[in-house]
Length: 42
Image 1: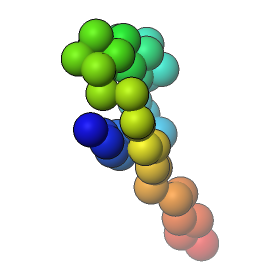
Image 2: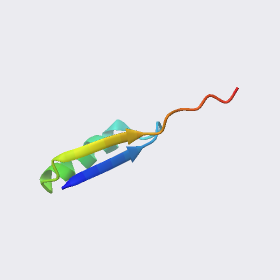
Image 3: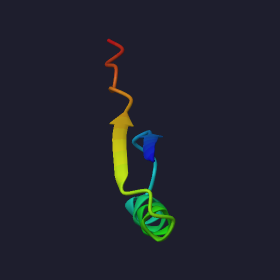
């Protein structure tokens, strides 16, 4: 099973760590990470 985590810059790393641990316990060992790119509004 592959799980994709998409998070923004305001997501706390503690939440990501807890999520990773829960996924490990469910034997979801393939995790894909993505984030939104910050856009500079000038």
